[in-house]
Length: 465
Figure 1: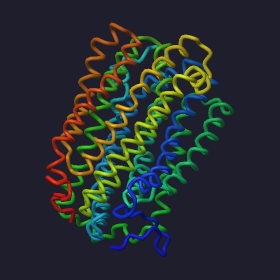
Figure 2: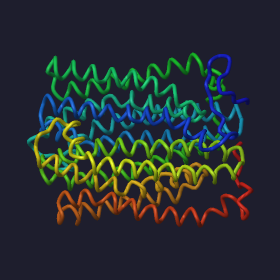
Figure 3: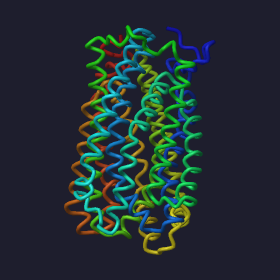
Figure 4: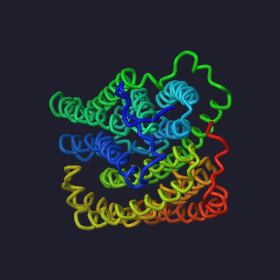
């Protein structure tokens, strides 16, 4: 299977098994980064429109459910990320039949995930919100907002599925274009539904779901037009057992990795919600800005995952080791820049993104923002090592690191937050990142000989057929 940059029928792919690693990753990561920023814009716009038009109570209502929403979404995101590694390896091995069968398996798994996640989230929404100590003053507002988001999960899952397939063959530009379109639409609909029609937070939720549906539809139409060469036919849906098991194993491993982290976040937010509406608003404001900074770190690590997956499938270990080193340098460089911006403009950024004038919200949010970004170098290294190991089939160490994060958030919910208040909330993730990166660095050094061979010049893939 040939892998040109753009085939005659318009199918854009990127073969990362040849060429300079840093240049390839940056070229792949740039549109991915812009896409991540626009994806963050969904929640950011909701918060800004809610804050400027509905007040601080609306910000608290959105923030009170953020961990629960992330848990649901990241189960799907992790499933697609893990399955996409299998697709990337098949693409790197230039095995067209197995590539199509892997994509067919992704489609089936996502159809099941959409039904299960939508049904369960709607059935258990009220008890979950009660479990999370959602304040009574904002309970109905919160429930109305998140129920609409959960009802539209199919649109979000559909976009994540199709974007993951495109990125696995090296096309990170097309999902970006559609995401930009839907993000602009989200802004327009937010203003229309909330500021003009006065539909409140329900209008903000409907705007988000509608915009995500548009991005999924556009992505599907583009793939049907330009990517028929890799899309499975009826025959490819007779998926060999070993491929389905590999998809399940890789998807479940990454889904578990994300869900374990987010289960911890739900417990963590449960404790934070007990601190009151002002603290919930502070956490929401800080989180929106922290997420934008983390988007860059995640983009670099995702680009590394695609690079490592393709070169693992092609059996080129020297390229993998070089790419890991260069990705780590990029992560640390961005972390230092983000940290400097947080210390210089933290309060201004909080005020701009929320519209709040409450000095307590601004002070708490800026403190949390600065504390988190001080530890961004540890997070960047952590993400790179976790994604690289996952892409080379080493799933246990990344999963165990996520279990460490779960444990730390339980400790924080039980001891740090009750004792130190919002400072305890803000301390938890930086401490957790430091512990996790030490563990993953030790795991990578221990596994390096097994992965690359004693000399680092031979690769034991186990067969990327």
